[in-house]
Length: 349
Image 1 (cartoon, rainbow, N blue to C red):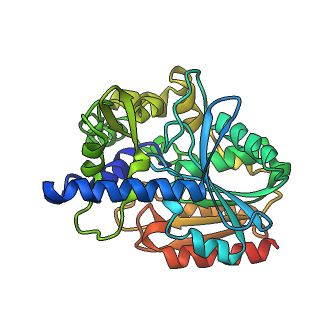
Image 2 (image 1 turned 90 degrees about the vertical axis):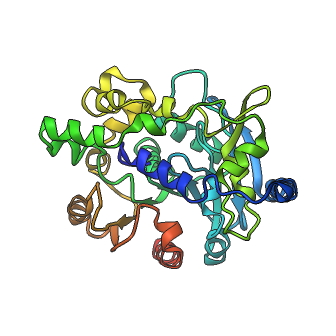
């Protein structure tokens, strides 16, 4: 997710949305079979792979390639499937939607070599070149917003506009570094990150992993849950394996080092901590849509910083505040999300 410790909160919410709520054993085989069929059909229609210099990358597409391309980067622990419920509406608005699975997410593995957010930006540019796309809207949710900002930092001439959904517009440490050391230590400890770190060999079958996420109250075909599951060894399946390690979030000590000692942590974690949008946007020359979720218990109140950024670029930045809304705007407020992205496309055109 975006703002360092948000990873723990959002991963917990991801599990809570249906974790361990299973149908009866007699129904499981049928439900799982239908999910597999649904997933395979969806992949045949929308799924693709490309070998970049860094990784064999999976991505999804919706719509007409003649329309305005929107390349979407998902949030932490999510993947390209996160926009599946709004994809058709976005294509009707005039977008050609390309949703990328970056390292460790969806069907894209974690590379063996050290990588960063900027390596993902390079992968996106490689994909654009392969698809003969010169300029595209670049957008993302949470951590995906920061990858979008990294893309603009590296490839401004290939950026038609930026869509930053609760991430990418304010440095991750904006609020952390305003806390006294003891307060920051207490905040990090309060997340009890060790409790949420998952092993990579938790399930003896893909079906068992699927039903660890399944929501028995959801009557739809939950095929998208299969996009979170990978085989990590023979007869060993895991949900989003390796991501806590990639993010350097396996302990409270690691999180503290990400925040306070970024030069000492792995490159991927360091690149998240060190990215500074105020510097990257100093000479901003493309339109930006910032979707800012706020609520009473918001741990990362970036609204003031976003207002200040907009004030520096009043003709280019559109800052939309979603009151009483959680971190995931596209899921919690889909109609407003679609409308604002549609309006933004009309403005850029």
